[in-house]
Length: 348
Picture (spheres, one colour):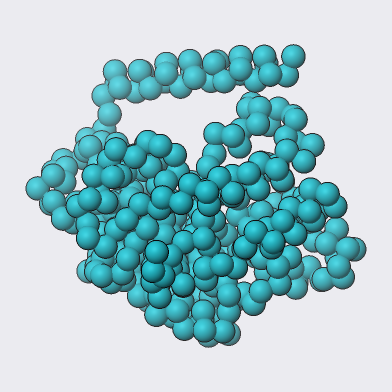
């Protein structure tokens, strides 16, 4: 298949359908209407996603199953080498088997020479010209504040890495990043590179370099990989240009809405995207159906979700009924009991 010079990836299934539609609409309005977009399947729940793909000329579904399997195997091999893989973690045994988040790394195997990846729980808010400019000089481009996390919950173990390869904490911190938004290039992680990383992580037990303060995180593993492969990396939040340094998180950062585009409150600086991290996908399904849900920048989400069909946008946002609340509480309790029973059986 012919390579495209540039494109956008996201990772989605029907569970995040409403968020996916909002993201696609925001990209069309704020980034570009003709940029090719490829959706990497999170799993096989894709009925609604496929309908959406068929309705848009510039959107396709990623179909390279070999690539997705390659990344799943890498992730699973690394995780299975870790002692925590055999422990009960947060009430779940081997929780990661239910997570295909690392499939997003298939973007490195796709048909875009250069690309930007957005998590589906995002809204695009500005042009990607600055990202593309940085990709002239760097192989990875990020825009997040992972490097500011306190040491106990940072992605990597600073003291251990300093002992092993003599990098200072400040040098390591400058290499930390998230996986919710990044620009890069096709072919960086070829089979030989991935095998080298697997040997370091598994055979030489460099999985200990990853903090694993709560659970195995795809972003933390990604930070390890970019540190170890030693390609040039740029993070806008560490830019010497103050105009580059903005927030991006819906649940933390204050933004100003100007014509349905959000700007950093401090200085009205352009932000690349609004990231609805820490909000469950069901909240966006419910608010799309007219239920009042506590989501910051809820109106912005609804604007982009129903941009192409405003007649379907809920006219009145109402609180859930007492019956709905009760049914959800019961369902949540039952699911928790089933999960704990499954974990107990696994640990016998």
